[in-house]
Amino acid sequence: MRAKLKEFYSLDFDLNSYWPDQLDNFGFWVRAMIGPENEEGSESFDIQVCTPEWLKSKHSDDEVLFGRHMLIVFEYDLDRIKNKVSSYCDRCSGKTWQEIAGKLSRIGYWEFEDYTPA
Image (cartoon, one colour):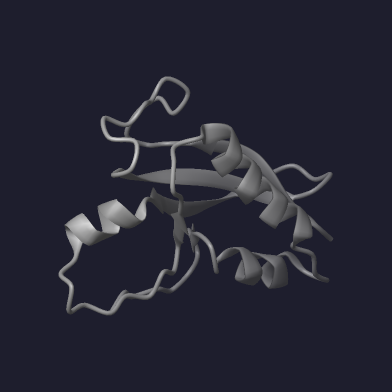
């Protein structure tokens, strides 16, 4: 069994017409709808897309952060962002969907994941 990216969008704005005010300082959430390849259905995985400058603007210098559920980019290029998520999905395989979803939850918050941020 293999994963497949089926939809990719933002809950906050139209991703296809979005352009950040600052090309080196932005952050937003995207929802990747991913399911088994060649099967109906998908589940949501939420990913925070951001730049290093955005991280610096949101956190103090003395903080230490984990980058879970985060895709860090250096410039805004929607096609590259989507292709990165899609290629990660294409490499995720397993005997069960649960096994695959566990791998996918490394990059995005899975809707069925029991996650409490520190």
